[in-house]
Length: 153
Ligand code: IDP
Ligand code: MG
Image (tube, rainbow, N blue to C red; front, top):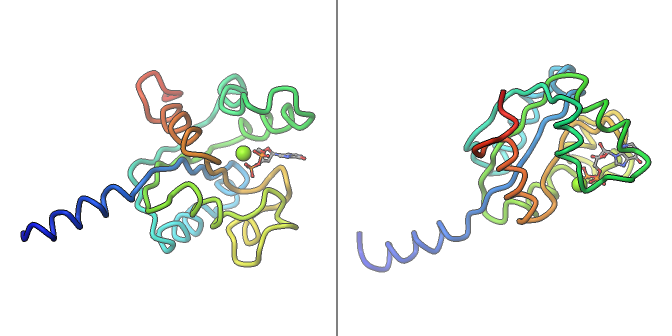
């Protein structure tokens, strides 16, 4: 490989980052997981890891610890532990922002047409998917599901 090509490959590699995506129980039980993953792949995300989990309420509360004290937290914990979910470790250029753009606003009524939540979410609570909101939370959330001492069971 010519020197310039190696340098270009290193730069490209450096532009890639990771984010945590999760298909929530409403979408898994609604048989939408395959279609949703296809959307992510179509948008250029590479699946680095993926698993199917049934979150215990305790683990759902730990995952959403930043929402401690919010009025919707109990409902969210109950929903997230009500059925299977599929956390996925995804990689792409500008992964965190690109995935947030792809999923759309929290409430499907506000989500842009064509986004995953506009297409697949039932409501603001049962909204089909989760995506990390920053590089820092991506790191923590990937660790939560795929690191040592993760919620793996
Ligand atoms: P996000 O998932 O778009 O980042 P957050 O505000 O971080 O939205 O909220 C986390 C999750 O909590 C949402 O995806 C949704 O499932 C749930 N949630 C947020 N706000 C409400 C609400 O007002 N009612 C019911 N559930 C909510
Ligand atoms: Mg959030």
